[in-house]
Length: 338
Length: 113
Image (cartoon, rainbow over all chains, first blue to last red; front, top):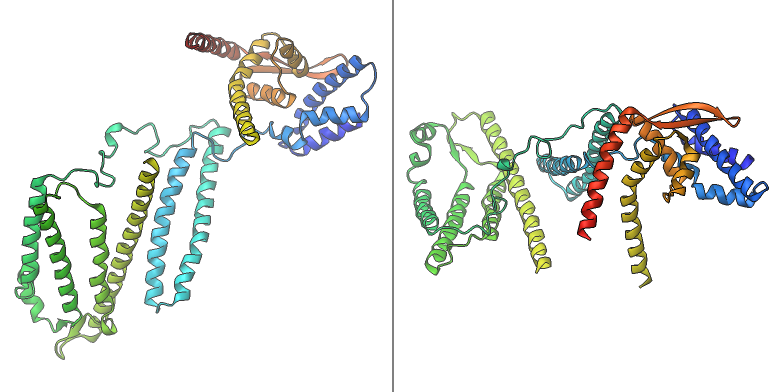
């Protein structure tokens, strides 16, 4: 039957090449036997329309051939949770490293809006390449497991070696719902007061910060630039503000509940003193005290500190964005549950 | 209304297929205690109320053979070369264990209903 030959030829095209002749020979024998039965039952050969209907019932050649494929998926259900975990982890770290590295590079070269937009536009490509590489690696692991009968490798959190004892304690994820003891609240205020006093005394008694090294530093031909003073007073204001907030909580009886948003608000405020240092005129945070100062060493120290500050700002900003996102998702989840 | 009916039907169809998938293997192994080639096996199963599409049964036979549960040989019958399948010794053991499992599930479900 010509239509059956055409059908089998079309199926063959989509079969794995090593087994296609064998599969087609078997399929032909089965279908011809079925055709014979049909024709015996009818007492005549099938009409073209009947033959067409019959072959359509069997399924399209691509569908029929696909059933003979050993593996119909790239990553199977056993490996998929590990794959998804690795993909999420890689996305997070790759995005963090890429954004921090690119922001620092762009800022060092003289920032422009186009350069920052370029960073954002580059992200989808980074994600795409990252996803493609990880998918290919896991597809290869899956293939080796199914083709060669090997055991599919698993990463510790999902593997057989995990233990309930390794799981984080309840509430360790955010800490907001965890009640704060009165003793801890008192200790926080006492140490806060001590730290605040120390902060106020440091400019007058540098040895409180540097120990005996303070006398050595004073002998160097370098001094701090003026920008350190607004930085210092800003730090004093932020710490004083936080301390007063804690004292108000303690006296007002609100000490038992920690507020996560306040913690991140303080983080946000910490960007202000860092910004003051970054905006120092000529990026000069150390100045020459006298002619004995080494101009190159001074320039290197200023550049080094400026870069370190930019990294610190980028890290703090990313932490804030990350936790703000987490808090937004959590609050949305709570609203949905309510 | 029509849309939700389609959803319900789709859901039922997916669950039905899932339920049948494991049963088909058991039915095929049971029937291959006697030697069969693809088409006669399909007919024998259909006569006992277990209809299976060609596109499901024939690849399933290959998979079960690759897993060592079936043996096969090409032989001429009625002037046509056909591939005959039979349960292997490993297949017999696995079939006996699967049957036990099936009976246990069947009893549990009957008790639950």
